[in-house]
Image (cartoon, rainbow, N blue to C red):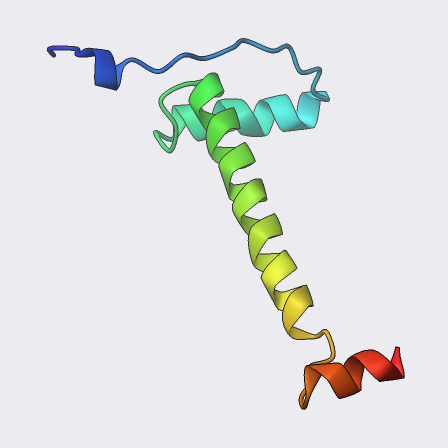
Length: 78
């Protein structure tokens, strides 16, 4: 594989203590081929969590009350 400057990604290493049940599940993701390694599985999990949070924020915003009408009149009510 030929690498170019554009394909090189800078990553930082962190240490995350995990209870044994999560470590077992993480290891199973790798063994089953769903992740290349533990680091990849953790990145996938974090990306999924962040995506879920973004979706939840949109859903929460949709439940906010909507204001209709003349903005000047609405501002007077505040």
